[in-house]
Structure formats: structure tokens, C-alpha cells
Amino acid sequence: MKLMFASDIHGSAKYAEIMRDIYASEKAEKLILLGDLLYHGPRNDLPENYAPKEVIAILNSMKSEILAVRGNCDAEVDQMVLEFPIMADYAILWLDGHMVFVTHGHVFNEDAMPALGKGDILIHGHTHLRVAANRGDYFFFNPGSISLPKGDGVHSYMIYEDGVFTTKTLAGETLEQVCVK
Image (cartoon, rainbow, N blue to C red; front, side, top):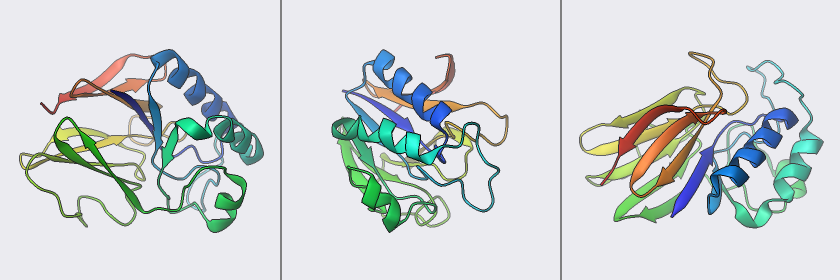
């Protein structure tokens, strides 16, 4: 199974289009969005080509391929225009014998951990900072932000395939890689 993870679009039509094109070229089976889809939030600058209505059209065209969780900038009004569910605080996946807790990061994160067992995986966005780490008892991943990266400023996303999480630049260059097998 091949999955693509992206976070924190924040209403950028430019980066939503790039994300859609990368998803197609990666040939992933599902796009997992980690929240903050349409609104930029009061603490962020406007992302490049801020156009939430265009992002709505892009995401709705992919609705059968998306699994999404709610970010702190996502609201019920956003759910009214998006044709796939976005209001869950988390989703649980099972990948190759690992429980994967997928969330935005503003409710559950490494400082407010969900109940994880040994070898389980926590994935969230929210901070706009990439992380790919084996913490000993659990694995932790953050794909960074597709549109408003913080830290080193590299726009990024993450792919899961065959027990390996790979964080990549928008040009497809590998940034981090962690095997969970």
C-alpha cells in the first residue's frame, strides 16, 4: 500500500495544485490530509496564491481519494463546502501491524500523547516542521507543510510504502526516511 501525507495547505491554490500533481505522479492509493486546508490562520502570513475557493475545487475533485482530519484552522463552515469529511480530530490506520494515530497536532501531539502501544506510530502536522523519528517506544512523523514550511523553509510531503516513511521535497528529493518494519 502506498499513501501520501500532506499538511497545512492553508488556502494556497498553487500548493494544492502541486500537491494534486505530486499525488498523481506518486501513484499513491490515498491522500491523507492532516488539517488546515482552507484558512491561513491569524498567526500565518498569507500563503502564495491564497485562493480558498480554488482549493475547494481541487480537493473536491479528489474527494474519493482523501482521508482528512480537522486542523485548528478548519471549521464547520469549511465542512459545508468540502465534499469529504474533515471534522474528526483523529483517524486510526493499521499499516503492516502498526497502529497509526493520524491527527493535526493541536490536540494530540508529543506533549499530549494519545494512547500508543510499543511500535505504534503518531503522525501529525500543525507545527509546519518536518520530523521523522524512531522514539524507541513509538515512531513520530510530521511531513511539514506543503505551503507554509517553517524551520528550513522546505516545502514537503511524506510517502508511506512497504514499511518505509519517506519525507520528500516538492521536486521528489528524499529528505528523511525511516523504516518501521
